[in-house]
Structure formats: C-alpha cells, structure tokens
Length: 474
Image (tube, rainbow, N blue to C red; front, side):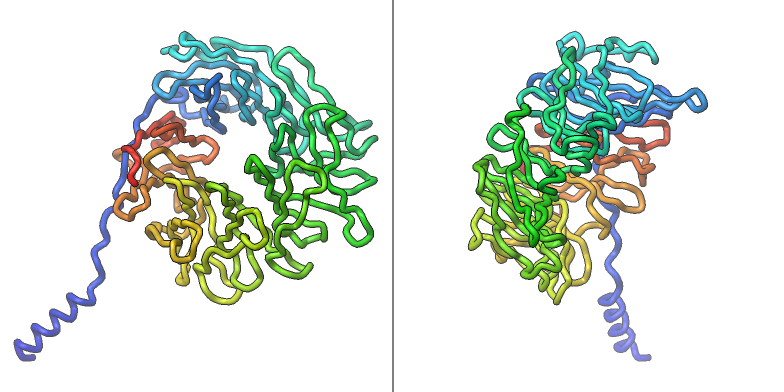
C-alpha cells in the first residue's frame, strides 16, 4: 500500500471511530444526619409541616428482626438533628399535614391525627433520643381505615373514607385535630354497602370550599359528589343515571381554582376530558378527543401553567402525546406530535412547571427518552437534552434553580438539570459509582433552592441529605 493510500485509510478510520464516552458529571449532596446508628431504619414518607411549612416531617420504620419493628415520625429544620414526635409499634406513613397537625396511617390498618406544637427548642434538638424513648409523644386518635382514599384537608379536618363496620360499610368521615372524635359525614350508600370505596390518588380535589370526589349508591350508581365536611353539605353533583348512561366515573381531577378538569366517563370505558365549575349543572364533556364510545383518550397528568392546563391523551391517531386546553373546546388541542407514526406516541410523562414553562419527558422517533420544554405551540416545543437511559420517570421535583428527576435505571437514580445538556448531573456522594436503590419518590421534597431527601448510598441505613442549588438560570 502506498503511503498516500495509508494516510487516506488512517483519516477514514479516525473519521468513523466512535466518540469517546465521557464520564457522567456528578454532584455530591451533603449528609445532614443518619436516621439511626444501625442499618435497619428506613424512611417511607416526607412532607413539609409546621404553621408556615417551615419544617420537614418524615416517617420511618425500624426493624429489630425477630423482636419486631417500630414506626416513628420525626421533624427537622433541614439543617440539624431530628426531633422525634411519635413512636409506635407499626410502620407509619404520613398522609397529609395541616399546620401543626400531622395525619398519618399505620401498617396495621389504623390511622390517626397528631397535633404537634413546633417551637425553636423542639426544632434544635441536637441528640436523638434512644429508642424506644421519644422526646415527645402525643396520644393519637386511631380510626380504622379501608382501601386507600385520596384524602383532602378541608376546613381544618381530614376528609377520607373509613370502614364504619358491617352495618354501614366504607363511607365518608372527617378527622379533626387531636382530642375530637372522628365523625361519619354521610352514609352515601345506606346500609352495609360502601359508598366511598376505592378512590385513587388524584381522584379528589377542592374547589369553592368543597371537596369533589367519586362515590356510589345503589340508587344512582357512580356519580360525582361534593362535600363541605357536613352531612347537609354532602350532595350528589352529577346525575347521569339512565338506561343508556348508567354511571359517571371520575378517574383523575385537577382544580385550577376556578374550575375542575377531569378524566371521566359516562359511557363505560370511554374516558374523555370533562370540566365543571363549582356550580351545579356545569359538568360537561369539554372535548371528545378520541371520537366514539369504544375507547376514550384517557387524559392524564393534568398540569396547570398560567391559565392553561397541559395533559397527555391518545386521540386514536397520533398515539399518546401532549395536549393543552384553555378551558374551551376550541382551545383544546394537540401541542405537538413528537413521535410520528400512526398510533405510536411519545408517551409524555413527568410533567412539571420549571422557570415558568412546562417541562416534560417524552420519546422521539428512535425511542430515545429526552427532556422537553414547551410554550404551548408546536414550534416552541423543543428538546432540551437526551437522557442517559430511556427508563421511566418516577418523580420530578423543582427548586428555584434546578429540575430534578428520579429515573428507574439499573439502580434508582436522581438527576438534576437546568434544562441544558451541559448542566445534567447525577446526584451521588463521592466514593460511589452507583447507589443501593437509594431513592424513594415519597422521601424527596424541594423547598426554596434546596432539595431534601433520604437515601442509602453505602448499605448502612438511610441518611438525611440535602443539596442546595445555584440560583436560577433563565
């Protein structure tokens, strides 16, 4: 081979050689404290609490092997050691908070409300009391629960479903703060049948001082109901009972403060976009996105940005894509067909508001998952950057400076970005190349410019971590 041909061959090989794989940038969080000095304590849930949501409450379970386990609730200011405010003999999960009241449920099928008082002294405890001696224990109010109901705090009370026994079934009850008994709000389906069984997360909302929720009675079947927490104020809102349309079933709801958007049907299986105000008789199908009655568009992930509501839907032609509505039929439209092809959608997920715009995750024509942002127009819907893998997104969180997302990878991994490829970082402390499935979506929360979470990076039990972000990038 001539020297000229050899040089040409070398140039060709260099040109087609794969680009070098660069190490993924990482960012190290700060460990605030260990949940326990042994590796058997795990956190399950976390929520902002206190009169001005200035504190963080989290619930844990500690296993003692053959000796059983205990559940506890702690509070912290996010910078110092936690303060134990409850300990019991069952796994404990926080359901909701309202000022100093922490509503929780327990692994035994019991639930309760604790009325805690937060003070500077309580918040700055520097030593965790040794188990099982909590620093403060308030006597809980226990009530039997049923299948999970999407509870709402309304007028200082938690409204949810409770099993009232064989004579009444599962019905709507209210749980006030400590020292007051739970109250049966209304027996919606009188007698043993249950009227409030099986409402799922996202299937209730609050509008105009009332909670909207799905319920069932033998007389009217499945319908939309409202309550202000009193028997007189608990009424059926919709009435689609007829031979042709026996039920109205709501699956997901979002309140914008002026109206509600629903994924619902009045023909079995035909889930479409519905809307209503707080006024009786206002419930209507906003748009039949997938015409016909055999399969609806099933709108999901309602997210409010400004005066518009974004959601995903399958119109039967473009697959599941991103849609937007301004509350009118004419203003309800497909934003962009990101993954073209008949019946093949980009399957948007993880819809979240960041820097005043909607950011979401979707797949392109090659099946690659990426982060997108949109201003509501097709031209303004752009790819920010591709992701390290195409596994699903199990949680999104936003601080003032970064968007975080939790992705189910070989291990569950937490990433952060400001919307540019150069900013993408994996959250992991020094000395670790992979976590031990460390993250749980329910124990991650954002407050201001700081992300707080619990994780087990080293196999020694969960620790409480935080990561403070740089200021927002426009």
